Every structure is written in structure tokens, then in C-alpha cells.
Amino acid sequence: MLGAAQSLQQTHKMKRRSVKLIAVLAILFLPSLCFGADVGVTSTQVMVGYVISPVVFGTSSRPDLNYVMTNVRVEWMRFAKNFRMLTEATYSKTTTGPSGYLVGGTFLLRYDFEPIGKLIPYAQAGAGILYTNLERDYSQDLVGNEIEFNPQASLGLRYAIHKKLSLDVEGMFHHVSNAGLGDRNTGVNGIGCLVGVTYYWE
Image (cartoon, rainbow, N blue to C red):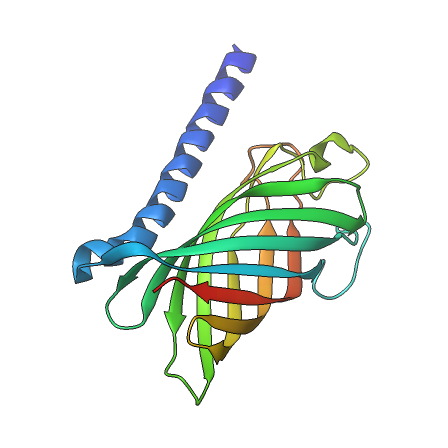
């Protein structure tokens, strides 16, 4: 009876977390329904950088986990005035801490500020799902499930060197955790710097 009750409780927890994830995705897409979106691929951004975690310093419960990150983003929706929706494919390989990788996809909501000459500042936030093999290392409690979530936020600058090309730099806060789906869920809180380029298809 105790085992069945625990299993039922775990099922309810997973349902609640699934509802929260769906709610987050719905919030990301809601503006397109409210403002009349312009849908179509308009740009591709490729970013490479380095993320260090934790933000301040490591402890026994939250040891260092640093990784090289590569992101490929496609802008496919515009709405309101300066809002953009992007889909991101991401791959990270650890360099410090447990050896492994994180690969997955992310939905990003971006706001472009008014240009300053050739500079275009932007802010973005989003979340997605990662698959990782870090959970196989039982010496750590940071990542405890094959499936993890990656809420994140960034501030960036794009410098136009051509009407179809910009050089980009970005500062990022990157979180990784499994929302309690695994027994180990200390989580990763990292900050990183990325550089790259954007190609505009229009």
C-alpha cells in the first residue's frame, strides 16, 4: 500500500510539472495569437561560448560544472513591434566536473531594442528540454535525470557589418535541472559569454 501511495504521489507531481511546462510554452506563444504574428524564417544565428557554474564558487553540494556551448537559432516569428520568436538547437560539452554532454532544443522570446547606429541590443528568455548523459555519474548531484530543463535569459548585441550579416556577442544566465523528476536535482546555475554571427535571409 505504501509503495502504491508513493507511486501515485509521484504521478501527481509529474502531472503538475507537465502542466507548468505547458503553461510556460503557452505564455511564449500567446503574443502571436494576440498581436497577429508575421510567420516565416527571417534569420539564422550561430553562437559559441563558455559557461561556468556555479555563478559564484563551488561547494560540496554544488561543485563546479563548466561547459563549451554551441547554439544554432532560427528566427521564425515576429509580432508587436520588436518581439521575435526563435527556436534553438543547443549542444554543450563539459570541460570541468562530470564528463558528458547536454543536447536539446529551446524556445526563445527576444526583444530587439532600438538600434544605436549599427548596434542592435536585445534581451531574450526561454526554456526547453535537454537530453544528457551526466546523470550516469553518481558521484554528483547536479544532474540526476536523462531529461532536464534549461530556463535561461540573455542580453546581447548585434553589430551590422552588412545588410545581411552581423557579428554578435551575448551574456547568458543558464539553468539546468529536472524539476524533481529525478532523485538528484541540485541543478546547474551558470553564466556564460557567447560570440557568433547572424545571417538575415530577407
